[in-house]
Image 1 (cartoon, rainbow, N blue to C red):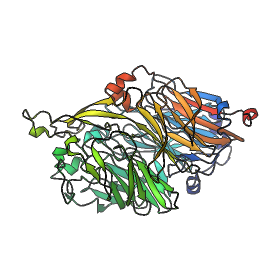
Image 2: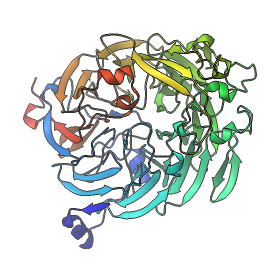
Image 3: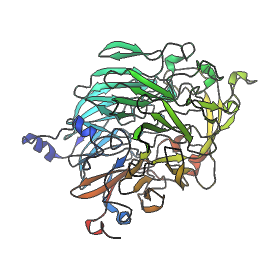
Length: 588
């Protein structure tokens, strides 16, 4: 449902004033053009780094609210979006597949679009949406019924709406799309339902498909309406027909490395969770049980969807260690072009930017139990007695051996994006220290039904904290500093040339830290848990900071003992915008 609120916007268009157009050049330069944010990640490399330094270590204590906007109604739940800023307007998505256009200076609502969601949608991990994309005169976002919608930026009117997949089969869509050379690129969600992960590229003007790339081997890609190439090789690492329901959801979106013209997408867990059903329970010398390309990072040609390279973080995956986490191109201290990713499995990986080849890996959370480490080829050295047991080997055939594994299936790091500072050369990683009891169970596939074959209970590792914001040196994995938090961290991170690191907590605080020491320099209570993604931009000579407030996401739904620990937290739905008043910018 679309509700039009501002007649003035339509009048401006009717008067013949030209509408500003977002171009490929705007997307390319998004990190350095400080009066706009037209990409998720504040640049398609997802570094979430701003060159702005008006707000810095000396004056951030003077940061105060400029305005706040409520999403209203009863549709609260998790607010995980990152706002976009263009031509004086903020575009921000909310829970239940809503998109708002707000005056960036005042917070006044210009228009609102509510998707008409059908009965029976099957989102696994709350009714969240992580953001929109802008190109030309349109704003794009995905909906929980697995559709992509293009709206007129000025009016909010629907230009086109396309189906990504069948929501009745368990598909949904929650990520922010990415746009490369006029193509809008989307993934899909639904890995817990035996769906097949896929990447799709559409023409931004018409919404028509240009290419598709399934990410589980054996499935055929398409290009301009015709079959193109098969993903991998049929039955090379999947037994029988299990590849047909192999999971690998591409649910978090991707990054883009312009130097190599490569789209980098992560893929989720293989289905079902029970690895013994995928004949992956025992190691094989030829790696035929790896279940490609689940739990992997893929380098894809954005023009045609062909896979350039792959790196699998968790072969023979059996703990729900998705491989979807963002991959960030950067230049290391030695001048090498690298890719960095902090995986759900608890290891921080550094890859070669040219071909995705393994360079190094380091544990970034404590007490990892499923692997002893990562070998020289980038493969985990499994602790075999930490794999959940085979139900068929149990006396009653109903439940495999229970094991306690670290990290939990919600990961050393889940979806919440880390940030890289070009100033400090460090990555700032929102992590969680928790484990899980996990066991396997018999399961058969049924369309639209959960396809896990596992049971689990998440437990905290330490009494005094779960969340941990860590500053990590990608050259050696050294944790330069760590800030502990009682509740799990679920918010994105942003860093700036002003020497600041911003992130939020479920307890409701937006915080700023010193990028070199981790000292807390500023904090503001937003009224609900912060699981959104902070941004900063410049407007009329002043630097602004914004974040969404609204507790939700996977933790309250899947967190087990951890969910009980944070059950007191209240839901919400607000956009908060802050600035340092001009008279206090130079005040110490």
